[in-house]
Amino acid sequence: MASNIQSEAESARDRAQESVVIVRVNTDPNEYCCGCVVRSKFVGGSGNRTTLVITSSKFVQGRENDLTVVFWNKKELKATFLRTHGAFCLLATDFYLWCQPIHLLEGNAGLENSRTFMRVPLNHSTTRFVFTYTSSRSVESYPVETPNHAVPNSHEYFMVSCSYFQKTSKGVSRLTGAPVFCTGDAGTAGRTIGIILQDCRPATGCSGAEFKVALNASHLQKVLSILDPPDPPQKRNHNLSGGKKRKATGSGGGRGRRQRV
Image 1 (cartoon, rainbow, N blue to C red):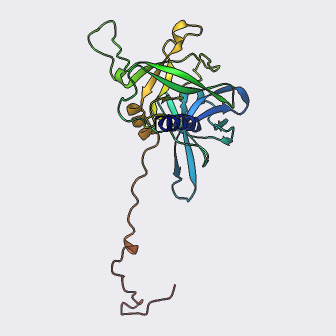
Image 2: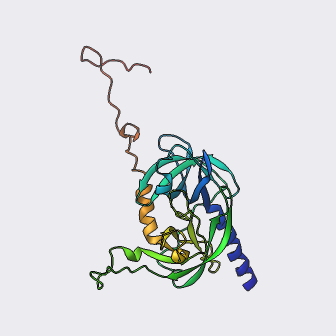
């Protein structure tokens, strides 16, 4: 039984790679960063579906029309920029069947000093597996001037230790937008506990850059609801709702014949 549970957990960890993408600039293969699949949906007003990806807004800025999303199996699709919210932005591609949206772990489970894992960019088309470590459940920041009061919303972030230091030409960590996964048991393995925001100490060559600041799953859900708000409910067409039909009238005001359409 234990071996079966272990194999299920390992399988879930393997499937997690299908959620990770690389976003690259078409005209410069050295410019790329991480992202992840958040959902697939139907495009309003059509029967077409689209795949949605979240990544770094700073990386995308100024390159909105020159981006490609590279999926886990090196499938490449043109990206369309949709919108930005804070450090992240939303991209869309044609619907791609062979990928998986991230599955967020509810609450703050998995944030207690635990082993996690990520897929980090090896180059502009490939990622590799690395073990990481959640070293702090919450980033409780306190300004020097008022050390007894935490910085607002700092509890929405946590710390991850990851030995990956590459940056883009804009100084953006290539990990911004990369999901952090649970190792866990069969029930939680491969679930996303958050996504990387930035290096803890962004200076190049800084020894503290091993520590990354990540957005926890609960706050990420709020960000996604802004980037990709739910579709408004469709208005009911009363003419098709089974109500009474109006009688056709003639031009003279009397009762006329109903015309054929």
